[in-house]
Image: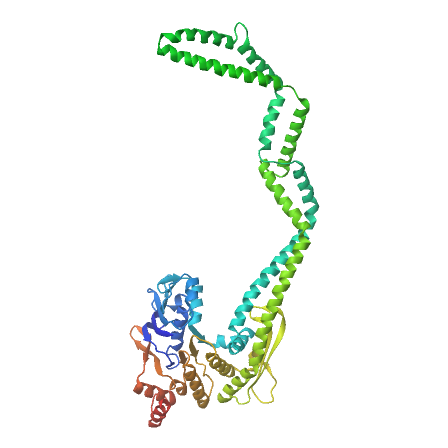
Amino acid sequence: MLTNLSIQNYALIDDVNVPFSNGFTTITGETGAGKSILLGGLSLVLGNRADLSSLKNQDQKCIIEADFDVSKYDLKQFFSKNDLDYEDHTILRREILPSGKSRAFVNDTPVTLDILKGLGGRLVDVHSQHQTLRMTENEFQLKVVDALAANQDKLSLYRSQLTVYRSETKALQELLDFQANASKEHDYNSFLLSELEAAKLTSGMQETLEAEFEQLNNVEQIMEQLAAGHQLLNDEQLGLLGQLSELKRVFQNLANFGDSYTNLNERVQSLFIEMDDVAEELETIKDKVEANPERLETVNAKLQQLYDLQKKHQAATVEELIVIREELSYKVSTIENIEDSIAEKKLLVQNATDELEAAAIAIRDARNAVIAKLKTLLQEYLYELGMPSASFKIEINPSEAFKTNGKDDLVFLFSANKGSDYGELKKVASGGELSRIMLAIKSILAKYEQLPTMMFDEIDTGVSGEISNKMGEIMKDMSAHMQVFSITHLPQVASKGQQQFKVFKEENQSGTTTHMKKLNVDERVTELAEMLGGKNISESALAHAKQLLQ
């Protein structure tokens, strides 16, 4: 519910701050007084786009604030989804700066225009010529049928199943596309895989082979160095072992002459033990090292194979080749098993289709069950609104495709006069007839779903006094379920409001300014009398105005 509207520096408005209450509120004023300006300001805070021409004073910013009581709306999920702090008393604010930039806030938290518009659409339903045209669209018409059919839960289940259906269908198509493309590459991938598998790749093998190659390729030099080492260690006269053996004997003799000699003796003993161990290991290695041309050729061939594979697959290491091998293995096995995968996915798609079809049929059955009731309600309302011969032809037909709101095509045809052919609303209904049909639909919807604040902008244009009286009654009845505003130029409608505001202009030296004030009972009588008979108010006009208010 809109509890307060504040507009500063917008169009002809300097500063307007108006509190509102629940129920039915009417807004009147002479043509050009600024009623549309007021609605324009409200539209800005609900998320409509703006430009610098909106500013009254181009050097100051325009600020529009709308206070709402949202306690009766189910909006906590919306606030949570958009990372906003929920409050029962919520303030929407829009600022338009002299630079042309625009800022939007919800409870002082900056938001994008899309978020502001999304929230605004849940708080206020502005009925305008544009929305009247929306009534001619199938999606809107089905929404009306679904409200009467109480299809909200069924539609929620259907949309959930539609998500699953689309996901499974997409996955199946991807498999089919993969099969079509992969079949062309299958033979080549199989060849590449067989090459990699034949190489018997293991992590670290390249380093091992390269080390072995270095030894085999340099075996003669290694044997020469080993022989030289053996000679240095084991020569009878000059060999290191013989020399160390003599040195060991000398220090053993010195060890008895003090601790310092004992320490030196121990170190020489360690040197001899270590060198003796080196000599033994050298002897073992020397006996094993021998030329092996065949093994050298094998290792060289294996390394060349690895280098060729790395170049072919643009890999730097054997480990990268192993990863490529696994990827190829997956591709080859996938295409080899693709028929099974496609068959399994087709079964899942069929199951999703069956469940979605069942949900669509449940929605369709519920819709068909209320068609007669909707036709009757519409025709009853239109009869009271001066269209006694208006009739509708409404049919629900199965469609070929699954849509976001079911699997139905809606035939929604209208005839205004007895004997006239039925046709689409946008083709056969006049503007005045569309406005009355929209009012009838909104009134019906108000009894079946929680509608936001309703703002009717001169919905009574082009209708007679008696019909406007009935339109006012309908809007007043609607206000029992929601907050309703009507911007009107007809006294019959204005008098039905539980409160009435007047929009008026004042001229002074600085220019023209639009104001808005709530009328007391006497002011309402005067305003209604002027609407009935003009500025020169007659006694009969006053009497008629009082009668309307009573």
